[in-house]
Image 1 (cartoon, rainbow, N blue to C red):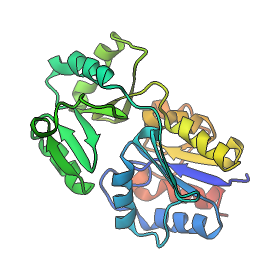
Image 2: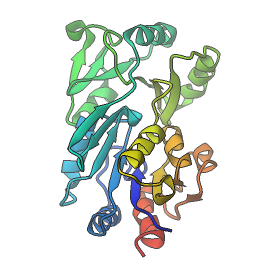
Image 3: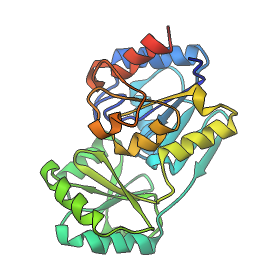
Image 4: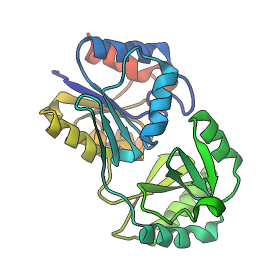
Length: 268
């Protein structure tokens, strides 16, 4: 297999959410760099957050491509360019906010160097601290739907997720898609936004065939990326996601399944 580009989700793929990258995965990333195989860090988080994560884990080199917000942001360090793609309009955001209001959840959007939230929330503040983000209350900056953005997010207890997803499925719209990025996280995104679309944009800009790309992920918001190339799901990923992939890692995320697979199949 002639792989010329490797992409991977961050949370629960490269490392469990909020945890340091294990030595095996860092060795694999350094070996990719040494062999001249570019790497794409592809996440639902912002490019700002991903730069912070990159700095904390110190690979000794810069990651060539950082894809944020499920593909709506792209930092291309090879060409020295930044891109922003599809955004939800403020009108669409308000429509989602009104639809979801009866659940009493605390929606948030990424705003500049932080999160814009409706009320103080321990889980969100902890996430801000982990990712070097500021927290802004809507009373200071306006409602979460005031300006176009890539997505609006809802964190909830795991047992609540099926109820919320069933409700949302009964209120479809051409203006948005929903993806479950974690067991407790539901995201509303622009219908044309996906990690897969932006991965293919990278391929086109850098003249790489999708058949020369391997991508790793674990959950629903990775699936379009995993379907457009040689897709690999983590052993402890969503069962639904495994079904769209070519293969599954032998090890779980926290065991270094990403790095282990690369050493066995690409970095031999």
